[in-house]
Length: 263
Image 1 (cartoon, rainbow, N blue to C red):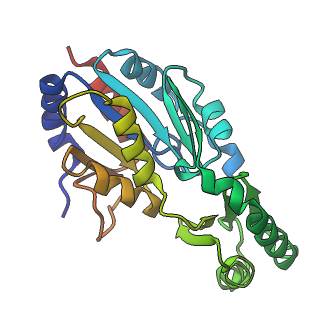
Image 2 (cartoon, rainbow, N blue to C red):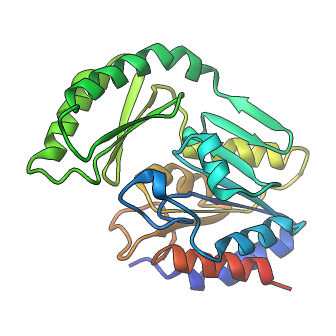
């Protein structure tokens, strides 16, 4: 059983003090925001904005939001400056000194459009499903689809229309993610941020990544030796690269507050 993240906190704070700086990277949905039936209704947990702002204002902490949502979408929902934002699983990244779109993203756009059109037609009569165009990636949501066999029909539609050269399909919580088929994901994006933020520094920058979904596992691996990944879920998954866990966004808020308020 993973230890609860409260047992990890003293080590993380000590790492930050020794190094002088730390990257704190967080997923959005299910981490900073409770999971909701309709993705468009997601919002920061009440009270967490203040702690995030205080954490980002510390000279010893760099805060990044690394999400599967489109960058403009997640930036609007968080609404804070001085943060780094990585949207579409890191295919687009913005922040102080960074404005980057992965070069493979534009090349994959025609295949994404074909996938989107095909899945949209196949699921036109499947109530409770949504095909979300995030420009550089797609999400097929089915959290609201409650007819018997809906998940199997969604999976079949995605397989038929999106399992093609140039695209990669992954699964999350009641969602299929379709992205350019390149070796790029939240882990690569987190490594890119670490290299960018720590450019010119002699020692590796300590880091923690907090997230709740399968797509966060790559990031957990990247930060494993720098501080660690924290998976959000109650109970935590049986198999994870994280080294600790939190029950939900309310406990994430508590941890952010503790890191922000350390003297």
